[in-house]
Image 1 (cartoon, rainbow, N blue to C red):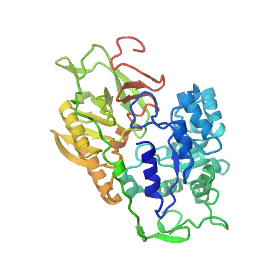
Image 2: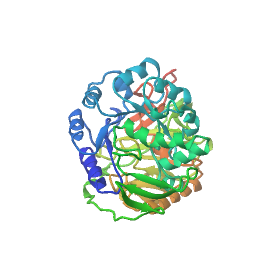
Image 3: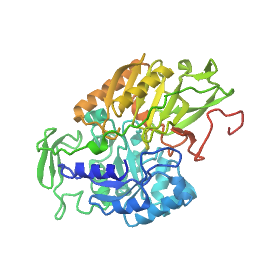
Image 4: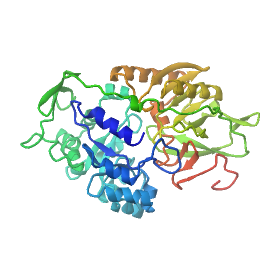
Length: 466
């Protein structure tokens, strides 16, 4: 939605009993390899910085653009000088990492190994240890947190399903997990509070001391991290797990009606070209993917899902401008035996992404998303088994958290009933369209080799690189 969407988020959050700050999006679109709903220019970025509660520049995902001095990316970084700048540099190392850091990004939450995090820490970056619904890096990265490194090591969830929030909590849940793994509470809690506040320039937040805002969390003990009370600016806002103040409502018509596929037919037909095809290989509990090469199953001259080998079709349908773009590919790792899963949450351009054991159910799943103006759905035999509508920009629910979490759990169970083995299939699905996390991803414009930052054909054509 571009600037109107950011304005809505600031307006909708301004009177809440919590402090909500934002980082202005740096990469809309994330790359030139996909179709986004809007574009945010360097001039737009400068305007957003004049708005209240905007701290800095968000997640600079286009790291190839930074390293290769893309003019648009350089202009945004220049505008953001002197402000916090979030990074995104999965696997970046050596001179490429140095060039990236020199350009301005100060944090990274994409580390998956201790050695990667240590190198980035030595390069001067703050490391956010990520523990979300799908990407779980706490066990691998926790040794990074020591008394010497604590001011530069923080926690984040990145992406969380509603049911994860209700079951495991948010940052409090990560602190609890860190303590359970032997980290001293006096080390874990400051990493999540005052050190994080300092990293983002919030000098009056994060400590109980004179001159600091009275934003307080009262815990029953330091092991369970059970929250008894929450105060914001000295005002009791939550007690016993319930909000004790009235919450404001805001008009949201400007962020509805975002799904625009048009009248083009939805075809997922892939003509066989002979030989091997590239397959996106899903990795458990990670957002990075691999690349497999297999001879696909073919029926009547068309590539078909092969549930016996766990190789099924995947498609990304452009939903912002009715271009008719449909990117087509194959994916391994869902273990889907029947039906289809679809979602309008597909980072970061958020087109409709769908996987399925057959074209008919894939088409029905996409149609169901269109009918609810965004959402997530499980379909079998063209019938909806479970669905979570997301009518706000096709990304957010207008339901209360417990209700959204219940529907999210029903989605997971429905996916499991189709044979899906992934613990969080919709979170995994949402990252398969993000062409800034290696290795192989799919956008509405086609397959992308992220390491080479270019489109690659589905069929290899027999060549080494295809």
